[in-house]
Length: 299
Ligand SMILES: N[C@@H](CCC(=O)N[C@@H](CS)C(=O)NCC(=O)O)C(=O)O
Image 1 (spheres, rainbow, N blue to C red):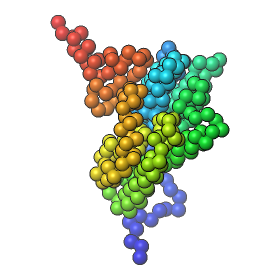
Image 2 (spheres, rainbow, N blue to C red):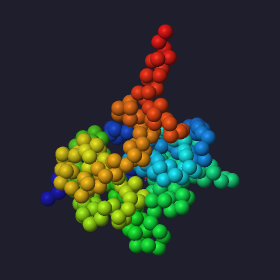
Image 3 (cartoon, rainbow, N blue to C red):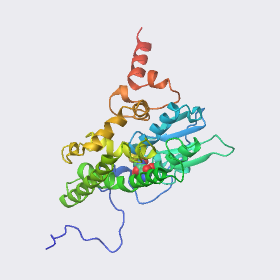
Image 4 (cartoon, rainbow, N blue to C red):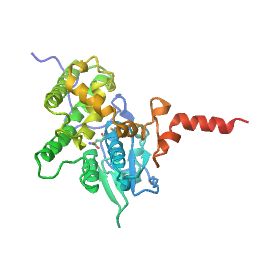
């Protein structure tokens, strides 16, 4: 028998109060800019407007991987967009991403700037722009496998973040039905990945590709217990092939760098709010900036 429902939906939904969940202050049922604000532009052809959430990290890891492969044209300026302060609703950002979500990329290398939004689209755009980097040859079975896992991530992780993460960590009350539903789906995702990674070193095959770049920031972070403090709840240690893949990717120098870019929380040494040059990792993390400003203020 169905449990009695504490809420009966009206005929037409209206937005008449914040819902009380974390991030309720930035949620609204309409699109478009809320205020005028131009975006900053640096000296490199690629301008990234982002934040070091899992969706943002995909792109900074990709750019750092491209630079590590020697693609100097992948030099970029990365600007933080503080989504909890509503910066994604500024007119400049909305012009680059009408969906008002990070990450968004502006490629100014051609005659006209090209905007790219949606992290999966950005990964493909960059892979194609730089000669098929981290992308198997078009037409090959591994190319099809790579795209399949890339699009799997785009479809799956909203259930992990917007479903499981929201109801387990952010909703104003714990709703058993919702947590059960999304915990089940999230564990199913981990099992899908675990079975694939039992047969294959990386998602598309023997080589690391943009599919891994896309999936790792979500499911690797989940497997390390870094998302929603849910490692024990979801028994993530049981997915041993996911664990092996997670740790292998975590060791990549480009991944270590990419995770720091546009990060505005955590250890000061892990936060590089803006990235304009490779040397910024050594000189402009928050601990270094604080030490430098302390030294400047000392008599
Ligand atoms: N499907 C999009 C999702 C992007 C997304 O959800 N970004 C979040 C941060 S991880 C965001 O900007 N949220 C701000 C908001 O919802 O207002 C992508 O992969 O790029």
